[in-house]
Length: 357
Ligand SMILES: [Zn+2]
Image 1 (cartoon, rainbow, N blue to C red):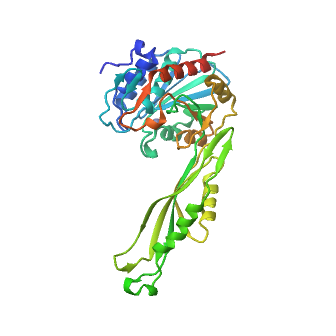
Image 2 (image 1 turned 60 degrees about the vertical axis):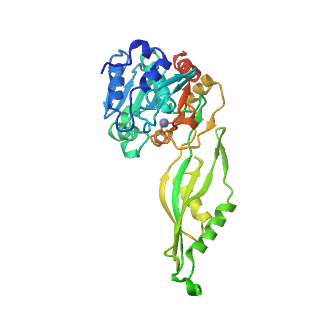
Image 3 (image 1 turned 90 degrees about the horizontal axis):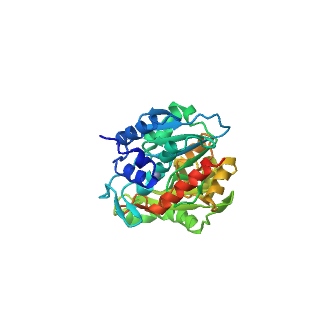
């Protein structure tokens, strides 16, 4: 295959977005796009390029005091009759336009066109963000070559519609189980109904008042919800067991241990088991490059409510925020698209931030 990422395409973030979208790269099928990106980066004299699996990174080594990471995932969710890209006026449609090849285009465009950024920059293009974390290129490189990721600050180019979404909320799943005693439904007074017992759990959820927390000027709104309920033995049996699955989204001032302690307090007296937990990430906006980035964007940051890979950076001790041109509400949708003006504006913002002396 001829590499579609020609110098003319690399010079224009819009054309580059389109070229990247038109290289199909559903998770676990990133080899072709990684090959194209690697070939481009290896041809840039001011960069040193590395590859691990289908994750490609390149770095400047200008001896600057500060190093920042610009990161984007190369994969997309499965195609949905939305490949290759199409144009309608000022909108580019197609799988990955918003999430997140327009963001990847920012990083690749800057990698090629900015030989002397004000900080040393690590450009990080990784595989398999959309699927289980054991495939995630950021996780894999973090384990195999943690030194590749050493930095003072990271920008994750996920869709945020051109504003800064800082930090991210943590997420926890738990099962609350109520217990009873089986009996024939005709003589139900001999048993204890575990499904009725679940009413006590639901009452606590219905009366629960979720917190709103402000950290570094960013609002985080928590949520505690039942997302599944299972129980019952047969149509004529009083059930002895009912399980309520709980999903808890918590602000980044709580770590998983504090989140679990809170759940145990809310459901005191019930049998609770945590089945899955992921830490959130504090907004980390006090780092000087973050402050300078906010000044370049010129708009107030908001808290990121969903979980993103900024939490993986935070776990490595690197403050990170989300910034990208796509509309996060369109990610993973069939009619996913991106506004060309958002691509041009966002690329100009990043250039302003990295190029200013
Ligand atoms: Zn994404």
